[in-house]
Length: 308
Image (cartoon, rainbow, N blue to C red; front, side, top):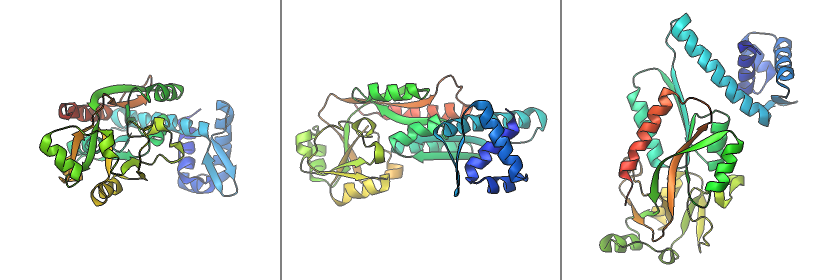
């Protein structure tokens, strides 16, 4: 296995075409095909599915390409620092469930590295995709929550994928709703908690998890509760519009970032003993990069904003 072969495989995975990849690499297609076949023979499995429409990664290939990217990136850093002595862009990628504070922490990381050259990625997405992105090393870190209900299933899933969960802080459960919601006005005045029975008069909003719409993958706690009205949405902007437009609500950590979501919303404690633990997932037996550690430091600051 050579660095050239790894680089070839990475380019093919991006182009989804051996012909296009060969042009980009300035080599003949037969030479590229031979190199990929030789690599697959050496590792003992196919990296790509071949069809008339092009090539696509196999399940094993997705994981392999993740490791290949890591190896090539590390070599480029070593080369830039010790051999060619050239500057190389800082790179970092994180995936997360739909948490404003996690996006905010990413923004602080970006601000800290301006005006340096960098190539950062942030993916606010479904729970399964957060896990897959870290597994395939599309993202170095993934931000999710665990609680007493989903921890056994998610921990088993993560272990099977060679991933680990590191807790950062615990949160009580809060109802996130518009300040104009009649229930919000009442509770803000009396400083009382909201009960699940009181929420029955309003639609519950949840993030859609696609084909993985299992309760264990839900981004909201109490996912097995039988809500009278429930609406699933795909993104945070739609969720915020529904909260204001139809007096919907969702369940959250209670950490509010007005700079991103605006000041029209509030978080009121839910009358339950349930808690959620915010943490990050990462590859086991790998060293977290300096940028990864800086991001963890930024998101850990929100521990001080956790509501009682």
